[in-house]
Length: 77
Image 1 (tube, rainbow, N blue to C red):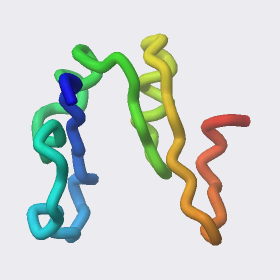
Image 2 (cartoon, helix red, strand yellow):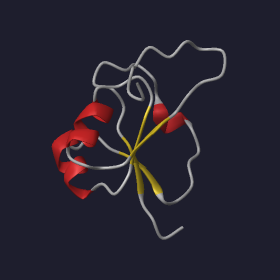
Image 3 (cartoon, helix red, strand yellow):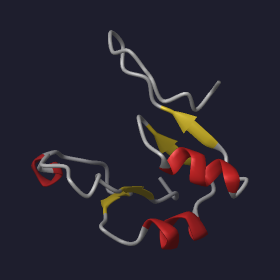
Image 4 (tube, rainbow, N blue to C red):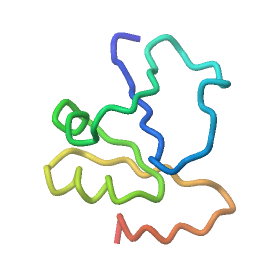
């Protein structure tokens, strides 16, 4: 509960995240990914190049896998 988690939707996402109820320590943000990576201790990603950027900055990355969906990210190859 003392850790703040940021959700940054893809710039072209049409998903309305504000219709979901998140815990109080989760914030939806449109801040620059570079600002967010500068503060990050861990990055969760699905199919995203942000995972590669975080890894290149030595930030631990946890890939979110969706059951029944083929994952082609190659992040963990």
